[in-house]
Image (cartoon, rainbow, N blue to C red; front, side, top):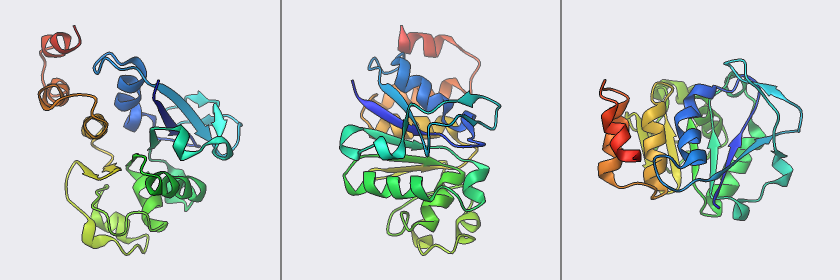
Length: 199
């Protein structure tokens, strides 16, 4: 079974990665369930922005890129306060090893500060948001809901569905027809579309 490491930290924006983690863990849309492993800086519980108390399965020290297939980083006030250096370093290690990294919202600011976005196409909440970090990668900024550049997938805070779609696409877990329907079902009232895909 393939493994997705999901970073967890105080004020993690749980809704930003919810669509993605559900589809990975259950495999209800892709037909391929994954193991979802939560990663903390320690094994102490953290509380998400939505009030969920999460006890990490493992610590950063326990994670090696060659033992995983994806690293997922959600937004958080933690990133905006200058935190997350250990997770940004881990993201760089995953990318160096050729393993996909998916970052949304505030996590993109943490990657920007660490230089991980330099030389790669990416997106976020806004170009100015990332420029405030002092990063040197502004030439690679793309004004889009989600951007895939090799093994790096990024998205802004208003695009959790597009983020999930982009990651599933990068991982080769669904064809274009399914991906279009997956994204579309969250913007239409017809539940039969989704039911036909998973049924």
